[in-house]
Length: 117
Image (cartoon, rainbow, N blue to C red; front, side, top):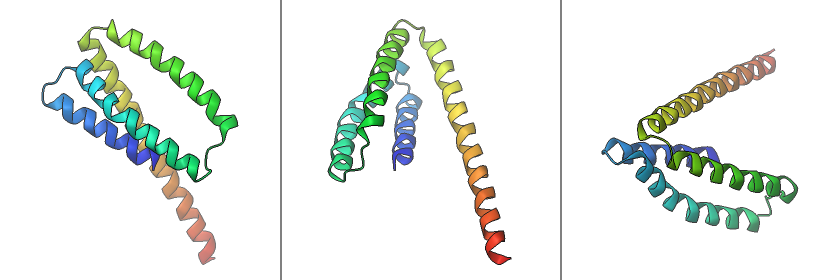
């Protein structure tokens, strides 16, 4: 569920960017949609008692610190450099996704072979 949501956010950001909207503006617009969606997801997950606060609190803390640092860096960064960094980031995400799919395929193939034997 979270992975699908992240992919949708990247698609939305890419969609905005492809219409000539400046990178900073596209990312800010993306955040406008991200914050309420995240809050509703947290509330729903909390009601279902699926949140482990011992793990979640440090993630939230360091996530906020990382977001502040990233925002400070990106505001002062040249748009062309920001575009390249974002492109590299998307490339790394794509490689990870492909690696995960291949790994999952091999795992399921091994399990199916064991069942047949």
